[in-house]
Image 1 (cartoon, rainbow, N blue to C red):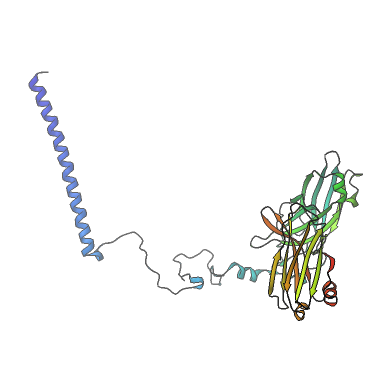
Image 2 (cartoon, helix red, strand yellow):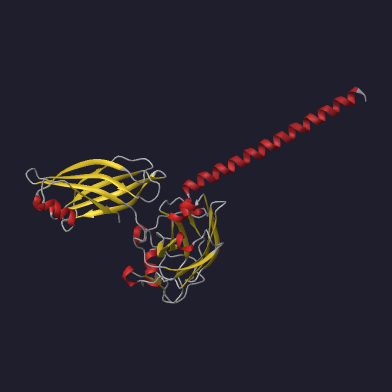
Length: 373
């Protein structure tokens, strides 16, 4: 290509590029000018502008319950009708009170239903198999106006007195005759342990909004089934109200009262037969006739002891006129998984024979075993 033509082509390309760049700059300048004019107009004449965006305004309506504003929804619910409906501001408890009525303990029957189990024991594997089959005629804990069953039962099992094995069945919804058909195997149960163990059965009612309630419970001594001689046995047990169905142990207390010094001495000597494999300790509190706590004490923790020996004494200053009406409350506690649980307790007052002996035989140390409740 000749040099003259090549130079003309370059000049044409540069000119076109400059023209396009100039056009872009001009369009940008015009757009910027239009935006600035709209901004000025919005400050000077805000009422002339229209927008499709929502605007948040402070609600001037009255305050409703709990500090919530009472507003009228712009949308009508498909459930709306001329009939009144419960307000969403009502608490759940008030709504449930209108629909159901929870029975008090005095209204519940003594017979709470039955539970059907299947038991078997393998001495070679040292395993106890418990089949939770079904429950029959469980008592209702709440009544519904429609007659609907509100019971969601499940079963809890554990071996006493060691409490080493604990299992729980699934929840069966809305029935007082649940079918479970579940089997649980407890390993490490020797023949000696089997002979000394009692199966503790609780039928509980699941509650989504509060603590689960106990429908009924019972116990079964495994020696009664002679499991070592039978391959398997079927057991049907009646359920009763929650009660002190198994011994929780005993505590030996020594009491002394010195009227000349107005001193009451309480010695927590030892305990025996405590359930479980706890790290036990004792809590002691002294209350007056009105329930006001006058003093509280506690012993040291004894590690992994079912028959702990404490031998710890506590002295309280208490006039004899108040001793007859005072309450001595001893709780046996245990540490389990980082928190404390109550094993059982003993409550003594002036009507108890131990306290009466101490008052009548002042300055003498009188010891007595008390069953934990």
